[in-house]
Length: 207
Image (cartoon, rainbow, N blue to C red; front, top):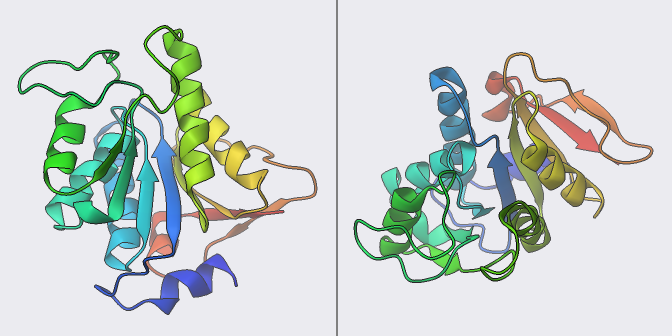
């Protein structure tokens, strides 16, 4: 089934319990790019899909905030590069300046499921832990990925290529200036023609 028909299959507000999309993107987004990320995450959640998402600033934080705003945090699984204990007003063990601690804390308090240390324990170097966390997000999906792709975002490419390597579709919402990379052998990009992602300029990669 194509991504277009999957997005149109579920009417707004009806949970598609078995459909899990990985969601990610750059850790640094401007105002317009953040609006793109929020709109993309909101569209998937409103259609009833579930999300697997990381714990960083940028696209991850937009998805978590969108889930809370819609009252749908229970449809989100958060893969964190830090520990499960998130004391109020403090950073948890393993967090870094790129961690969206307040957004993760709020989403979990509203019903999101937290997967702590998803990239390995605190002894694992941060860059390695973040990359492994992103691959854990990729393994958690069964429908595909939606990636808000900004220029020079290594984590976004890790997520997109990991999901494409599983033979699943990858929908990219490109930020201005972002090139569409080759994700896997024999695949190609095409425009998403169905609402609501078509209005965001989304492109889909199919192997």
